[in-house]
Length: 444
Image (cartoon, rainbow, N blue to C red; front, side, top):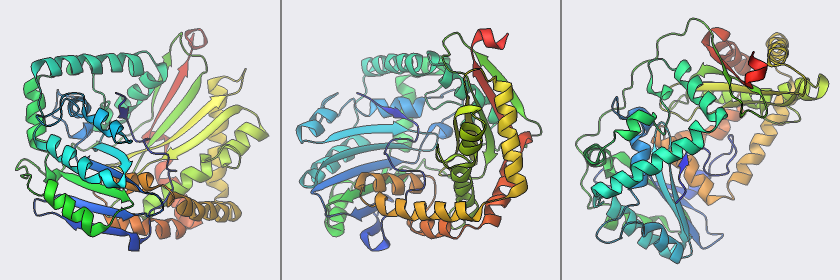
């Protein structure tokens, strides 16, 4: 069964926006489980998601990868659902399911016909508290994870560069440790480790239920009370206080040379603040900055200057995702054109950024972008599964339903001055990690 690491699970644009407030209902069960219902009656289907507020960054030292490891173990079965049968049952109902883990949360979802929602809740609630895990299950799945790491990370120079850059970016904060975990620590995870993790964190008071689709909110609430309501809360849920990252005083640089590299490229990541509940203006300015600098391959600042005007690069982009518990990164990626060295490409990129910092935001470009953002809001409402993901990940990192619903207007309120203030705050080479991925021959 395919599992997903990371954030790109549903095909929703980074600036895609939520359903209107009158279609979203928010409840809390007596045991602390939050329930969010998003109505969309255009098709008789429903997305059912359970988000646990536990991710890679919440793991105990020396147990890296256990959040992702346990995501896999959740498919090992209960008395009611035999090992490996969960997804087969969903498929028999004409639906599909999957799960994913990030630094800040772990989520499980099914997309089925609306009249199968009760069955999905019954099955998901069952494995929240009744999971079976034999020594054989743990041994088998641990080997699967090790093989996954070998295929997705150890055999991929780009993934290795990303992993090394994160470790350099975060010297003390656990965001510097990969979601899949370090190989030696994965190999040491035991059944006792898994059981302790399960009993501590897989509980209704650490979970969010999001249901989106052709449903009635009161009927969903009644189902949730019937299936999730009787489950006991955990007394081990504590505030998510992570180690603080010390101030970065100088740029960190690295070159990863590998004979498997077919196309050299460079990445630069800067430390950047996250979205915060009730205070999203700075994050909105960073999101707009990322789109202005490198959000599209045709009209963004970097693309126009480096791909079309000077033809130094074949690809240039910028990205920011502030949906996280703690500060994360603002990143730039540049793929040089044939015959252009990474050094020359980086110098050209820095020249474009310096010009942007001097000239400021083009008012016409900002207006065009805001129009695109408003259009994305409308398009995003056509995807109930994407809306479930938008609300779920926001709530899982500490944002509120109101924050999600306020986000469109916060984006629209961003001014050119806000964007430049965000750029001056973040685009500081002393707070950056720059990585080159290249061939061994070119690195000599």
